[in-house]
Amino acid sequence: MKALVTGGAGFIGSHLCERLLNKKWRVSAIDNLSTGSIENIKRLEHNKGFHFIMNDIMNEKVMARLIKNSDIVFHLAAAVGVKYIIDNPLDSIRTNVKGTEIILELANAIEKKKVVLASTSEVYGKDRPGKKCFRENDDRVMGSTTITRWSYACTKALDEFLALAYWREKKLPVIIVRFFNTCGPRQTGRYGMVIPRFIKQALLNKPITVYGDGGQTRCFLYIDDAVNAVTGLVNEPEAVGEVFNVGNPESITILNLAKKIKKFTNSSSKIEFVPYERAYEKGFEDMRHRKPDISKIKTFINFSPQVHIDELLKRTIKFFQK
Ligand code: UDP
Image 1 (cartoon, protein in one colour):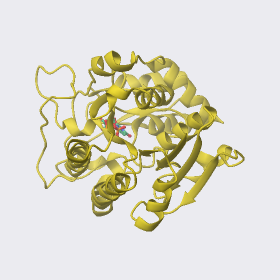
Image 2: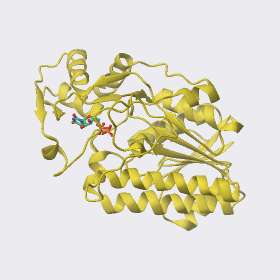
Image 3: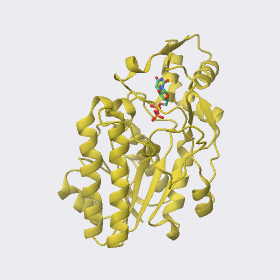
Image 4: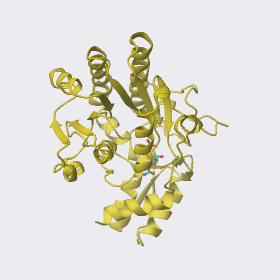
């Protein structure tokens, strides 16, 4: 099989490329290195089945050639990280909307190639009182357009609508995966992600910056589990035209996360509480709780996360220590 991975030098993309190569696939990875890095794919460069193209998914000519030469497209190229989106709103919207449209249109025009679209738990928007976890067909609650964060959720929701429309109208085979807080080696904290930020702060004995009161909860999925989910779904014909939560329902408060990381790194860092408005922008809105219901993906491919939070943290800390 020949795969095209957009965003192949990114955190999830580079791990996916590695797994596909291990399965003896041929892999082309395209990345404009806006948030991805060459370092992420260094170990793949010697592999004869791997081909890296430093270019932009907006380049239709290049994309047409790459899609033509592939059996399946894993579309992971997107603006990532709450901080990145707030700092680069225009670029984020354009990449997520226009980039995805180009890929779906070309995949449809060129022999209806299968597309796996990476989406996000952000599409659920705000949590609501009494709601324990999110299911794929739940309502979504978005904040005002004046709050930049919500643009990300809206653009990814639009990507999902577009992919589902291509499936319904044109029979383009698409699979949509909504990743919930995926973590592990090679993830950078530069764009806001909490675990790499806390680990780096702890290892440098600098204050660990907990935003808000730290009572907000998240569920963290280890990267290998995320890749298991994606590779499992592409082999399941019934998954076509469907949306799946990809996450680990085990939840933790951000304050407890900070405490665990401090303990596992033997750090002398103090835990510092930072108001959201100072961390992000005025009027910033955070989700208090976010937890996936993974019964759908369990039913389809018998998926269940193998790596729990302590092990996830230990493996990620080891990577940062190196
Ligand atoms: N967060 C934090 N300190 C940081 C970075 C993030 O307390 O240095 C919090 C953030 O406000 C959110 C949670 O950690 O409540 C997860 O943030 P992340 O950006 O990793 O993912 P999100 O779930 O917001 O997309």
